[in-house]
Image (cartoon, rainbow, N blue to C red; front, top):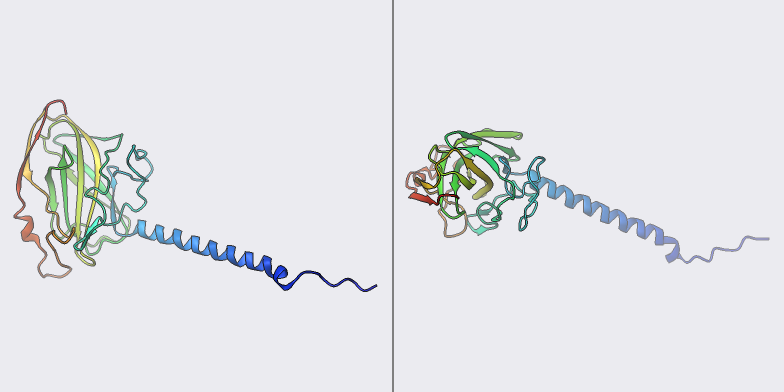
Length: 244
């Protein structure tokens, strides 16, 4: 007897192929998205140690309430035309803090995706996340000629820095590429300093961060680099209460 002809319609016969194609397409799009996220997170530069707020690195504290894991830690916080994130990137302090000693230096390290020809870096200290005193400045040579891997800078903590909880901030204006500002903050506790008092210095220069900020153009060569603005930073005195 002849075998019965298949009762499957063309549409039902092709359904498995259609489902496979859709699944494959979804998988490809998912992989592209993950690759994009990975690429973005590896681009530019971010603070590794001391642990930045929201850091996903091993050994760093889990996000405290109000924080989030920042898989894009290396991304800029803004450009001269826009503000994408607040100073520090995250405004909520970490539950665990790195202990530092007044009169000694912090060894800071950075993950390097693209150093954009180096640029200007500032490191600053605050006790209220509003008023900052610059601890160290590198003009032009910060991150210069660094290609991938990591980068390290020692930053001094003043001997007269009042003891207690504080915020340690890093700022970077890149030399080449989009006019950007980078910033990460680490929550620290200072020991060995006086119980309350004042800390004097200059306030950090905030450039290339929104239309109202100072614009620093590209300075990969020997042309203008905006360094004169750093010499004009405003003097500031921070008052810290005893028992901070």
